[in-house]
Image 1 (cartoon, rainbow, N blue to C red):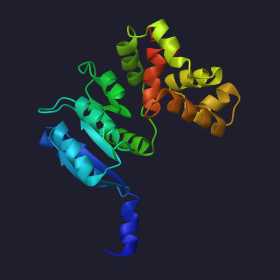
Image 2: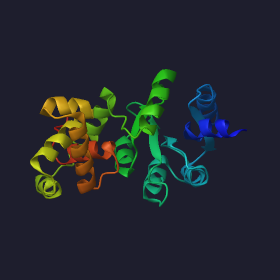
Image 3: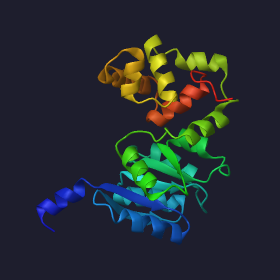
Image 4: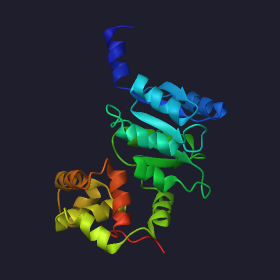
Length: 231
């Protein structure tokens, strides 16, 4: 492989596939291998192997199943988020509709989003690229509904006010809009700010609230009542 080939490889999105079913992993690999900007660098059958593969290969994205033996996807996500050198690894959790009560816990643990296992190929590829770019995959209606479902009973006013006290009024507004799924450009339009200024407010709020990414801000927005759960 020449230098130009290596350079091209460096720009590809590096993915680790984690699922205890070989057929599922094989299907994902067949799909991803067709894409010129994505490369599968490892596979794992449980959470422990996922963490080890991440240490070995330093992927951009881990496509993580939740229900696995030895260590489940939630605990593996938590370990990845807290391991020095792996904090930038993005986790995209795979789940099944209305059967997986662990989606919210996954986001709390540090996942950047989640996708339904029966998603189409185009949706899966889009999700990987969005998460690899550092964004949170939180736009789909199902995501907002599940987050609302698992946070509806968790917000306590006193705790919320204490947690949000580090934010300016503008930053509170911005976190609330992030919680509603708005992009930086949409937040800017809503508040009559430039997208760059909106991005700055989002970044400052993340630092003050110690949020790993936008997905964590969405969780906090629901937990603290900045966004009201859907009825």
